[in-house]
Image (cartoon, rainbow, N blue to C red; front, side):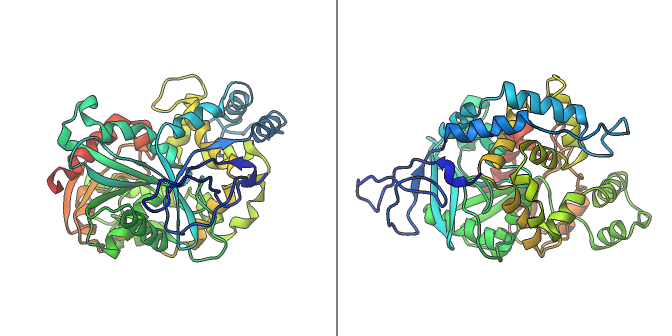
Length: 426
């Protein structure tokens, strides 16, 4: 299945004229027009029914593995979780509702450095709203942030003040979602950060802030290091805040250094566990193209995406047991279906191979930084470590709920964190 089977109908505004034209996304079936690469083209999503029918057929034809031999998730995604997911995916899930969620917001396409970038852009009705660019990670997507758009752009409807308002920009990383897939190497976090700076400049913003978790955190740090004048601060919920001695010890598997506080000892244990359980990252870093099965089996793709971190997998397993959590079955399948329907399982994985940065070492960021350490994140960076990593730390907090996909799981809490984080920069 190719992305060419996805129809994306868009209207294009050329310069200040009112001429409208249908435009195509790379590898889509649509009418093409020769336009400036720097144009910003309005965009909507529509997947052909035959692609959805093919997805359901493949899900229903899944050949499952044997049941795990343990009573926990130590061997990976439990068989009963995968079977429950496939049952709902093949019989109850409706992608058209996911399309409606996306198309409820203004979406656009623009070409940066030769790659089409898909993004959501919602302007607040409030005067002097602060622009913020939100960057997702793996195995996430722009779906992570849909629930926070309204609270951020219309804060008075969610317990905030008019002065809390943001303009919200949510791009899909290259190789993810409806953005284009790089056809050559070189698209690491630094280049994506540069593309985001270009995007914000192209949108005309003279002052803005940035936020990210997972890869989004690394890209946001890189934006800060490139230090465009317009970027006045960043927020991260997965900070690059691991001291060099801690990083060395956790990789070596040695005991924790003496003199650590309780928070630091907890974080040390979390990091040690993390480094010994992110096998997916090692494989994507070395041989992403060999993950060809991700383009052939939707249920296999789902299993690979679900096995990201223990807390998230446990949460999603409870969701498919019918328990009420911060995410729903539809939330989970919206994200997985996006990977399948755009055939981005492998192209998204390439980011791990493109990366040459240390994920968690201090970055030397000088502009104001805000950190939210959510309790179920991969690790909770202690405030002391955050202060060492970010010399201009203006906000640090430990919310009482939320995990790796904090904006998705806890949109109200996440929105409140962003309001508090950037209050002093308005």
